[in-house]
Length: 111
Image (cartoon, rainbow, N blue to C red; front, side, top):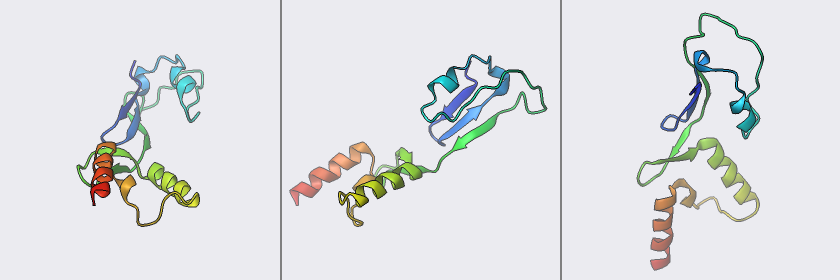
């Protein structure tokens, strides 16, 4: 029904209540268990509008500008790797998309 739509360019999740048929699939497959279902139908003034449920700050590749993740996830991964001494503070490799990261890895080996 497309009651929930994701905008990968802006990293947003948008809900359109008027499209929802209360099937519960969104709540069942949500990997974060962030969605719940409440029986009933509430017709308020915003029923036919859209509501942004989530928005994240995108991270863009330093070379090509492609969005490849969120600032929160990148920060979390970098903190975990630093804690395990697998990443030093001067390493910028994780600030590139998967394609540019491979290019930088091979360029670093050639020097």
